[in-house]
Structure formats: structure tokens, C-alpha cells
Length: 310
Picture 1: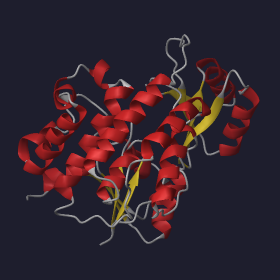
Picture 2: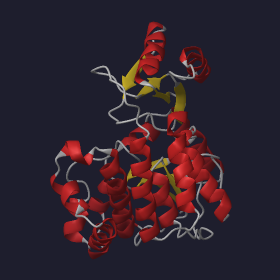
Picture 3: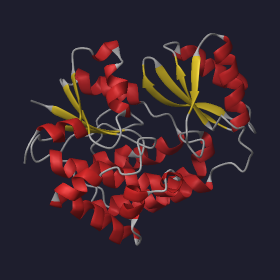
């Protein structure tokens, strides 16, 4: 059985995530303890006890998700070997560690830098209550969303397509006012729009300075050829070479995450079993709701760990 491990990204966090496997498995405890040492603070305590507001901050959330993803992977991969990795946004770093392209230490350091750089790019603007810098648009009319962004975006008030998550969900990102105007236009067309609980306009050109900083941070990092195949967010294709991987990690910060296309590439390559390996269940729900994926097996790591013994 060829299994694709899917690592979730920001938005999947919750207080208490990973505590169940921390208490039960030495391999998971080792991941969390190593993360604490590399970060030089007890992020595990924040993950397990909160408060939720602090955990949700980008600077904390991204490394926390990385560690939780990899803790789950350290447990489940012993029982169900991974044959392909995919990671949504920050989850891509988990995929690269699982693929043995990047060490845990380098991944934690890179994610810490990434989170800091992205936090520094959040616009200094008032966000209207009940809205945010990002919104999920529930429609299969992707052309309408792209065109709406084009209409309501200007050099000083930007809104872009951030993620193509599925055939029926596409995420927009940018300055709050531009996102609101685009969302109102789409709502007027009878399309449901949900504002996301995120700090900033991720995967938009407003993050380009963060991408430039990340490019510098990656210069001294050695990335090996993945021993387990990995599909990149930016290209939605298999990537093997160091320079290509680094380029993808830079581009995915401020350009569109091609998640739908990445999943389809995996399916086209013969993968029929997918396991969401991380906290929450966002990707599991996303896959199960899509009729295009009705013939594949979709599992959630937490449910699966509860069903098997080690």
C-alpha cells in the first residue's frame, strides 16, 4: 500500500495538541524536547496549556505546528511507512523533514525565522471586526475569484489568490479593505465567504520582503535529495534538487499555494491512501468533502493512532 502523508498548516492548531502522544510515546517526546532546546523556550508548555491567543500568534504557531506534525509522524511512520509527502504552507517543512531532505534542527530554525519575517510583514492597519486579511471563498468558479481580485486590487490596496485548496474552496489574501471589498462582491453573487482567523495576509505579495529574507536564511542550509518523494506547494510537482526546493520554499511565502493541484498530482501518480499527519482535521475534511476524491481512502492520524497498538 502506497501511503501519502499530508501535513497541515497554520489554522490547525489548538491548545493541547500533541499532548496525547507526548504522554504515550518516547519518539514524540524526543521531537518536542528537541524543539524546546532549538527554540530556546518551552513551546511545548504553550502548546499543551495555552493560552490560545498566544499559541495562535504566527511567531509561536508555525514552529508549534511543525513539531506537532513531526511528533505524530514519528509515531505513525513506524507502523505505516510513508511513500509520499505533502505539506500545506508551513506543513511543507514537515514534509521535507519526513522526506529526510532537511534535518529537524534546520527545519525548526528555518520555521522560526520564517514566522518572524512573516510577522514583520503584517500591515500596520486597522482590521474591521469580524473580518481579517484572508478569507475562504466557497465556489468552484475560480475564474470569478481571480477576476474579482484583479478588479479590487491596486498597488496600495492588494488582494490576491493565496491558496487553491480544492475545487470548491479558494482563499484570498491581502490588505483588509481590499479583501472586504472582494468578499462583498463575491457575496453579492451568492457565494459564501468565510474570514479566516489569521494575523496577516499570508501568501500574498505583501509577504515578499519575508520571502527575500527567507532566501538569505536558506543560503547556508544544506538540503538533501529527498529519500521519500515530496510534492512542492509552488510547483504542484515532484521536486528533488536543492536549488529547486529552496526556490519553492521562497516562492510559497508570497505566491499561490497550489494545494488542489498538488493533491491531484499525488492521485495521478497512483496514490489512493492519504493520512493527515498533524493536529486538527482540516485536510481530512477538505478531502472528504470533495467528490473528485471519492475513490481514495482518507484517514486522520489521531483516529488511526487510537485504533492501533505499537
